[in-house]
Each structure stands twice: as C-alpha cells, then as structure tokens.
Image (cartoon, rainbow, N blue to C red; front, side, top):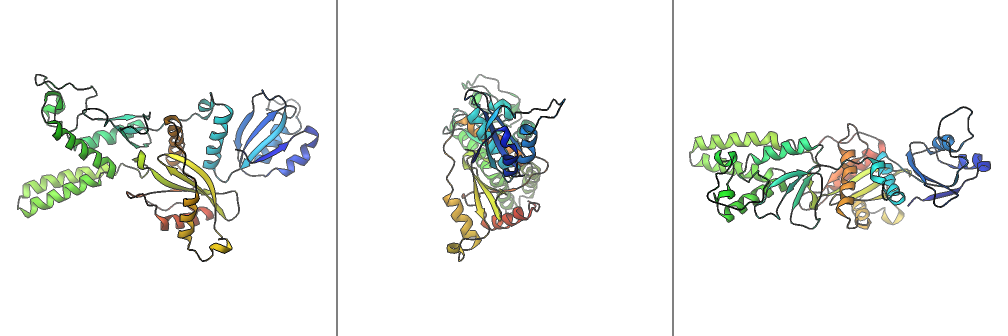
Length: 378
C-alpha cells in the first residue's frame, strides 16, 4: 500500500534524512518486534517530521522520539490533503482493523432515506446505510442532520405522502392525524385512498428527489400554463404561488446531494508528480484512485484532444469494488468532510442524469488545479 521502504538504523540517520523528500506524505514506522504496534501518520513535510521523530534526542524534552525503536520506514508521497487523508484511512484500516474508526474520528453523513421496502413508503433522515441492493433509496450526503431534515420536511409539504413512522395496518375506524386533517396526507392509515393512489404519490416524491426538484417544477409550470390558457387565472395564480415557494426549497440542495446508487463523479487533485494531477473516481459513493494524469501527452497520444485523453484515463481506471455498507459510509464521510469544509483544494465534477461527466468543465478544472487557482463558481 505504501510505495517506499527504507531500513533505519540510528547511525545511518544523516544518510536517510537527506534521502527523504521535504514534501507531504503518509508514513508508517515499524520496530524490530513484529508484534509491536506500528506508528502511522501523515505530514506536510516528511523530512522535517522525521527529524523530530528519529533525530538525535535533545536534553530535557518531552517530545516523542522513536530513534531507538524504529527499524523500518514506509511512506508514500502525496499531492493533496485529500489524498493524504484517503491514504491514511487505508493504511490505518489495514494496521488497526478494530480501532481505525476512532483514530480517524469519521462522522457519518446524513441521508434522506426513501423506505420503498415498506408497504406504505415514507421518508426519514439517517446516517446509516442499509442493504446496498435493497429497494430503499438514499439521497445525500447533507452537511448536517438539521439540513437534511429541513430539506425533507420542506419538500414533503408539496406532497401527500405520510410523515408517520409506524408500520400501518389500515383501519377505517382510525381517527387519523393532524396531517390528514390538514389535507396534507392521503391517509392510508384509515383507507383515505386506494393503494394505487398512494403508490402514485410515492412515485411523484421519488421523481422529485431523483431530479432535485426539477420534475415537480416542470409539473407546476405545465399546470400553470394550462390554467392560463383555459382562462382560469385564479388557479394559475395559486399554482404560481406554489412554484415560487418551491424555488427556495430546491435552492437548498448542494450539487453534492445525489441519489446514492447514481452518485458518479470525478475529483481532480494536485499530484506530487510534476506536470500531473491526480484523479479520484467516485462510483455510488465509493472512492478509487489516485491515478496520475499527465498534462503533457505521450508521443502516441499527441494527436488526441485533452477531452479524449481524460476519457481514456477514466476508462482505464478500475471502478471501486463492491464494498460493505460500513466501508461505503466511511468513503462518503471523507467526501463530505472535504466538500463541506470552508475552503478546499481540488475540484469535483458530477455526472448528469444520463451518467455522463462534463468533459469540457473537467479539462478547464484540470488547468485550474495544476495552477493552484480557485474552483469555478457554480
């Protein structure tokens, strides 16, 4: 997993010290005893970090020094903070399979879950993924549970899908709840609708979440146009009010919020290699990479456009293998941590509804990342 390996001895410190790069890296230190716990970390300057950890011990210091314990150094240079964090995650997961999660302090991302396995589907907010091939759908990740709940509740105000959390056993004698009294629910709990009518409403909700609200906006715009053409101006005005209420709701959605099973994206980060950037491929929230992409084409590729070279590089990248729900949650937690931070390096480009990545934007993004410029405004 780590690409460089050096044998360490205190008497060879000067030789090894100058062989190390003064650059970001993830590293692992091992002692003579195979059963001893390794030391794993990341650093912005490997040479300077090892000067403290493995250099001569200063008198009267409490700083950690492993000079007399370390015998093997393993490390991999990295080009960005995200690459360092992702590689550190993989190394810790291998070295400390029982405690790596606590060491990384990962906070799982909130999702809106559409419970389609339920006889009468509903929506809820969760940070736990269920069966990856189950019927339920997940939309996210959101920056916080509060943001996810606000978007979900504001969105469901436009529909009549149930808000209750119980498994329903419809009974005509049941009194219903406040939502049914306010005509904001079809009330399947007391057979206020047929099963077909409720299923149709659930399909509308799914279409709304799948399209980020665009499908409902289109429906309302068409209804408004029809009412206007029929000279039903009061109806058209009422529909227009609903459409105006929808706009601030859908504007809450960051581009990062996607339907999980359709979540496809490309992240472009700086590389430690000259004239290169690093590609990270994201499929259904799972990360694969990094893969170095050279700005200067090889001789056999000089006749190709930059877009075709990017497409060829993506095609050659191995798609992330099927992972457990827990590992997928961990990958998404790292993506969430990077995306929602105040300032971030690198850029991410999301596929459209047909699964196609925006190649022209990616090419421009590669140039910005290479020059260290700010991302384009979205």
